[in-house]
Length: 567
Image 1 (cartoon, rainbow, N blue to C red):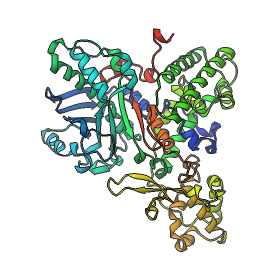
Image 2 (image 1 turned 90 degrees about the vertical axis):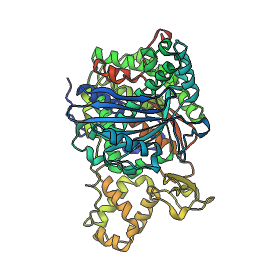
Image 3 (image 1 turned 180 degrees about the horizontal axis):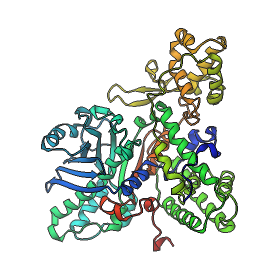
Image 4 (image 1 turned 180 degrees about the vertical axis):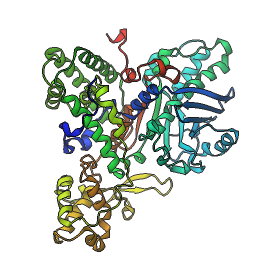
């Protein structure tokens, strides 16, 4: 087994000015370190058990259910409510007030009083309130055509059409998975010290995994409600092809800006993993075989990936061509010789699109779980510890940090209209982030502090008038409007991946690039932008179900299997 303790100090990391650009962030793919994969690995390794202690759903598909995840020290319960939602009320927009199903992840096991309390609140979502025993609050809508097709097929005693399943990939899509204190839920600090669940977003990803089981159970239940014992159940291979969809928009985008220490931890771990593999002197035959297998399966994944977005269609075309070129290169040159993964990444940089480069970076990690998987434990951050501004820092030191970490912003001319064409604000109706047009729409006076490039430039310009030996405390007494950028600069000083190195209020900015970067860290696939501001994706497609996890390799599913039709 390779040395997992090897750290970034021994490796050459890709520079942040390459990694943290929107064009690259918007081309990232899930990796072994994505939260979905590290969650399933952890559940498998720790021998978690799963059951469904309650199923109280009637023949119309209305009622409640409970799914338990029982770990070595803690139990978590997904409480699911199924609703009879008229088609006219079904909407993925954040302003929706009703859904096909609503959920809460409970710390522990709910009793009858808890279930009644949750039944009064969870279906209301934002309009209700949950307690600090709940870790997440979520809702989902059916994919209507596929849902109807599957129910009708099972009721008729036959299996649904595989092409229709692959065309959608999920029976339900979540439209929000709230956690970390929202609407009364427990703060993430509750999970500190709880091992697997203390990692970022692992509780939310556990909820989504259990929601997947609920969607399968519900569709089979409705088939039986129509036909009794004549109804079919989904064949295991078809079940595995169904994940959980998600529809998400700008509400997710500012997260990458508002949590610089955490984001640095995510990307530092990812880049350290890539660097460790690139430093390997020689790939064994078994490691080469794993890479070749995953490359072949990545080509299948790219062939099945569909989008109606013109931008994404072009990126998919490039990705398919890239994977064909990568396969041909590997076939022609093999994977023997010194530092083959480093050579392969250098070749990808010269010959592939950004999509292909990032897919290659994800693929070279696949044979090396023993080398990179432990980095998942380093993907959290104590954000409170870095919040306090160091007032004793000198102006000279602050200038140095700005030059080193924000040099990409200091040359932008914000007197021009395009570099300041947009502004971020929070909608009054739903308290959700929105992006406005500065010179066409009202509201710029309520701009949120997300224009980091502009504000870094303003801070740098103001510092020019100050003596090098003056303290930051003195400076901020005179210019308190710069506090948020000073804090960011101090956080970024020793965190190279803390900042997205693009101007987020430029006329050309594509918010979906922010969404894809975050969703790739979750482990989402089938990225399908519906505009430059919202997207549909799929999670857990191909993954084992709770009853299968103990006997499965928790990483084998991440790329679709090679079938006879693919050979």
